[in-house]
Length: 198
Length: 234
Image (cartoon, rainbow over all chains, first blue to last red):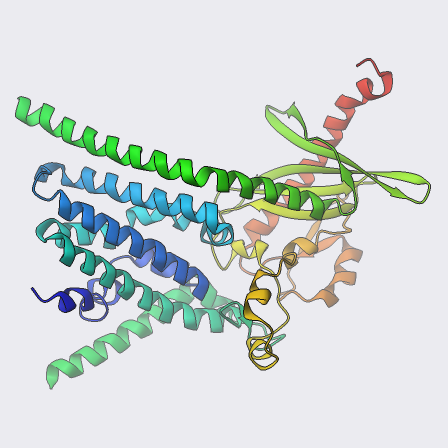
């Protein structure tokens, strides 16, 4: 098994949002600032790696018709760990991410990776798969929030860019997220189709 | 029968048991930190909404079926002793209750407001706790302001500053004036108004409503306490 390939596929070839089309809810909702995107990525990557390891560990003993409730229990446990740790050690981040931390439970990427990968593969590839998918998720979030933060709140990394300028509020609202995501999908598809044609 | 019902039940129960065991440990480790954060937040909020006041213990009275928490503080100014009141109030916003602490003086003038808890949308309603920073990214890079200092500096969020000196006994109006700028203050004070959060009218209204409701409750609570304070029966 090619470990590097398992890790790297999440970044471009099987990017969770742009290619597979999963996890749009947090992607659209949280990408208003880079700091939100960063902490969301940390949370999701931790849960992804943890749940992938555990799912892979119990893949032979878990009855297959019961796997969904089992996965959800495991994922919920990891999300609670993230929730409690952020609340205890990063209260400002916890405050600004709000409801989207508990909502990691229903992030389809995590359940998707458990279903598609971890339940069929040994621990190490599952771990790498989780890490790669988490980073891929984070990169999409980063690009999206980079543009939305600049255009929508006239800021970058929380610092004002042009003092006194009224930012385009539409970019911080839901439509802005869809516009930016559309451009990203367009770019991604353009590159991929050019690759195929060659 | 046993294969179909008992075994899956046991498997699921075992996994739930292990998960909760793990979580109870995590909670044990994080609880002191969370409690400390909460206490610090409360003490800091009290300092913010009643600046310069000596604040006593929290009073809790049931009003309209829910618990109302308030503090009484006093401050010396010359000969007289001023009294100040702080209370906790909340009102439903876009994503659950927006809870804040408000400090008022005897005449009902707001001395400060601090939002304690909110789960509003990031980038919109959640901007009610955003700190307005005047330095741009370029300033920070060129003048070499230490990055960490800048980020950790605790300044009062601009949305909350607006409530200072407003009259809580009168209606607080909401005006749409776009990006916050300290120069707007005199006009807003004249109107007893605040500038709304762009794209988050619901959050803005929730905070304003909670101030109005909290002031009404504070008056009720003080009226309830008045007899035992003056009669000195206790």
